[in-house]
Image 1 (cartoon, rainbow, N blue to C red):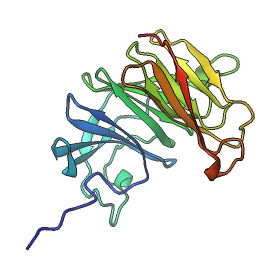
Image 2 (cartoon, rainbow, N blue to C red):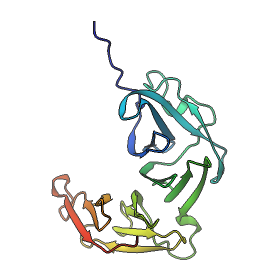
Image 3 (cartoon, rainbow, N blue to C red):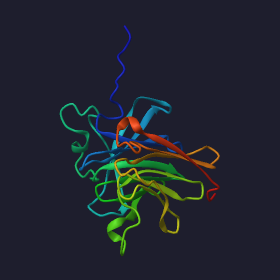
Image 4 (tube, helix red, strand yellow):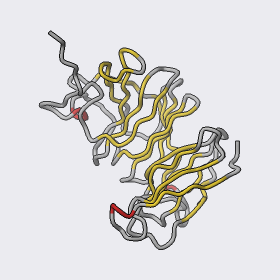
Length: 226
């Protein structure tokens, strides 16, 4: 008799984005609810997601400092939601994009327009961007998907805001990179670079029509900083 394969190893919750850490052979996951958590999943066998350990990030009420990880007892969430199973699990207001590079996982939260930076080597977290801490008009709002370049520049797409992709440099300069006009009923999704880093792809989810069937995908050719 063939054994049944569990399909909930990575957790049953409102998954938004994931980023793989090939060094530690784990996957970071965001949760798109107003009191969501930040997770990591470590497969029993790297490359096979059918079995493994799901953990949730723990820390105090602050926005920077050391963190710990605790195993989620029941990833299926059959009786208790995964985010409510571990005391002290850190809450995030609407997890969105997630991107990993060079021992760091960046992820965004739309409820407070923040970009977070998790240092996997040091197991610490800090804010890379918070629009409420910007003097004057914030250059980036409606934070959503995120990606990056080999130079360390982050590219953050807006869901709403001014329909821009903004860049955050390693020197903490935040500025618009591009804007889509005439598509206020849409959102920018899925920014990703080609393997050689010379082309940026992204989509306008609902395009000019405002309908889910009206999506448009764009290509931007560099050079980008490397």
